[in-house]
Image (tube, rainbow, N blue to C red):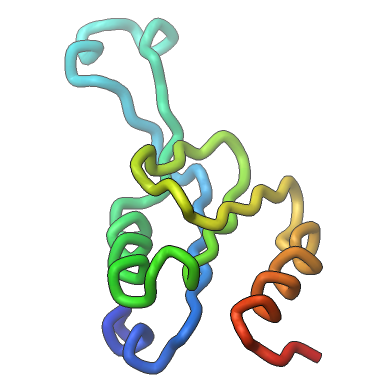
Length: 107
């Protein structure tokens, strides 16, 4: 199902950011790999869908779960971010609390 179809049927979204890609500035292209300033990023389609859901649902209805040293978008103040180390279960209680605050009944 496409992101737009999920947004039509959804009232809350979770975005999972994982450090799947490595990026560096074009100016560092000629440097040896060990000398480049690397940034670990989520895949571009995930970042796109993140923005899509924020625009469709609002910042208060999108929760970003992230792990590792993944770069977070820099211009999204007011967003809900939750960091976990090994398992999303580490933030489960906090997620349930946020869902309840948004009016959801969670068993």
